[in-house]
Image (cartoon, rainbow, N blue to C red; front, side, top):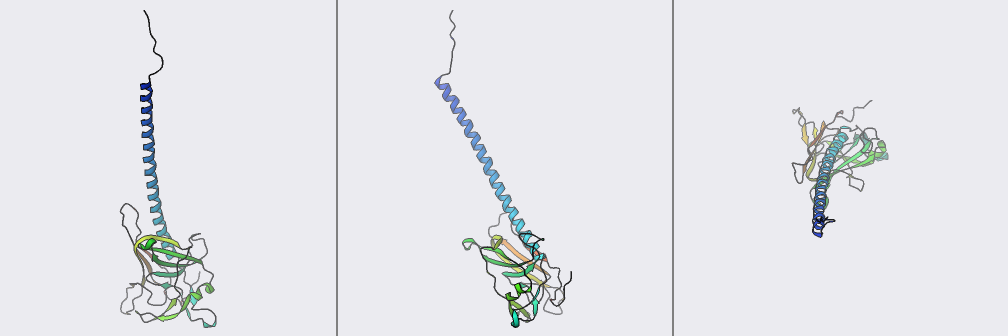
Length: 245
């Protein structure tokens, strides 16, 4: 009786094995692609949320760190009377703060210029800030151009040279439908005791609070959105009151 021994594999078995291995490898690669893509999207969304939250925290700390700088308008013999260095406009704002973008609360005081400018490709607007080291009165006096009557209150308030964005401007918020500043100041009516929100400074001095209203251009509930920031200002209101440590 003969016994035959089968050795090796047939061509069909090799083709089937290679096909199954290819399908298995393709499935593993596709699963890895889906996983990496989901990780990348989640990471990008978290980074966007952290950027929005970080920018709003920076904005709040910059405003709360306002310094009560008093300066004459102009330089030299033509310098005017001492005024509060605070430019309050609906779309721009200038002040001196103890908070620095680079070094936080440990850095040198900075002259901050906030501006609302058109967004990329003129889609919406963005909020940017210029940061210049504060070098005492000589660094801020030339920015004040004189005194002018406010159209609302009729009181003389300081006017300042316009600010402009540059290559070193830091973007605090982007892709906004609108962004505007308002200031909590004393009412013009002496019988009105409660302070009011105005879109600009109506008298010389510092406000009780500053509010930055922002609305995203494309609202997305799944993402962290820029919100209105309100910063209380804990300073004396009159520039004639000296400050001591």
